[in-house]
Amino acid sequence: MTIDFYTWNTPNGRKISVALEEMGLPYKVHPVNITKGEQHAPDFLKLSPNGKIPAIVDPNGPGGAPVSIFESGAILLYLGEKTGKFLPADLRKRIPVLEWLMWQMGGFGPIPGQVHHFIALENEQDRRYGLARYMAETRRLYGVLNARLAEHEFVADEISVADFAILGWAWRHERHKVSFDDFPNVGRWYEQLMARPAVKRGMEAKLD
Image: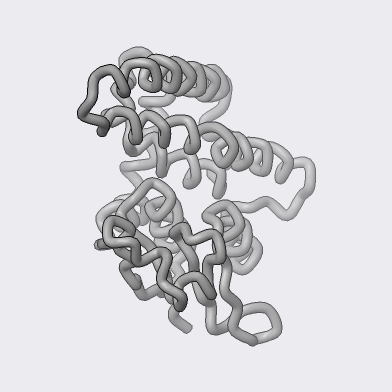
């Protein structure tokens, strides 16, 4: 059965389109135009109480009953559990997937997101402090990722939902003013993922 996917063309939306394609799950995109405030509409808030995209409704949820899920990390974990793909059943192997998924959710998303905010401001005085602060931390996070990928093909050894989560934000590296020349291991990982047919489909899926 087709999963209803409520989203917009953002890093958090791309995480899920990539995962759905990689897992071979049929889905229908329902654009939620965040530039027009559609994320605050009462019907959407029933699915995502925090008023953020993405959200999904799976008509064939646990026990065969429909289920709705919000927050991209929760959606990735749900889809991994549902399909048995990209989320190891073995707890020891699952630990690094959870670690790097939480790393993305807690840092490599919120911090570059602040770069997105400040870089769009027209007033140079308003922009300067915020950009200096958040771009420095964004580069630090890229450095952490680069060091991890120096010794691992993917962040948790085998490709997982954590890679999809991080990829959604690395996809915006140019907007972060980050060159992969400075983080070659991230660049290698990024190109390897983007060359996967399902990732390509997920990145090209029309979300807006």
